[in-house]
Structure formats: C-alpha cells, structure tokens
Length: 46
Image 1: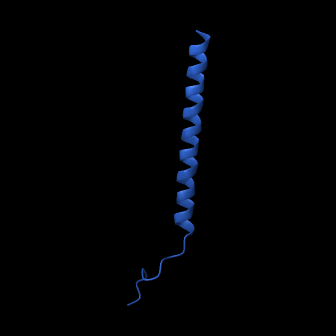
Image 2 (image 1 turned 180 degrees about the horizontal axis):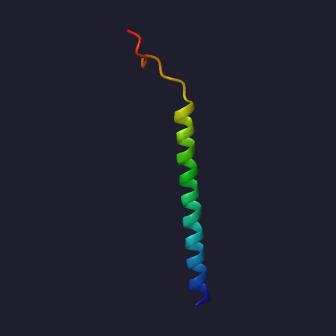
Image 3 (image 1 turned 60 degrees about the vertical axis):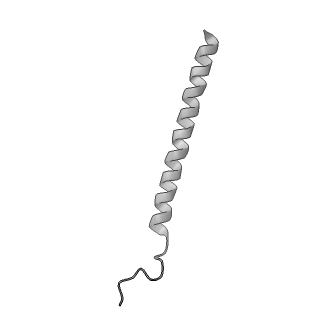
C-alpha cells in the first residue's frame, strides 16, 4: 500500500513540475513576443 501511495505522489509531483515548466515557457513566449522588434516591411508607410 505504501508503494502505491509513493507512486501516486511521484506522479502528482511530476505533473506539477510539468505544468510549471509549461507555464514558464508560455510566459517566456509572451515576453519574447512583446519585446521583439517590429520586423521590417510590416509598417504602414507606403
């Protein structure tokens, strides 16, 4: 019974770590998009 509990706790811990990594990656993508310079040719000057 103890082994099953340890496996369950390990799985929950792994899931939490995975979700935190995904959240950090998504936040980094947002910061990258927000701070990137505007690509040439995308302006409205004609």
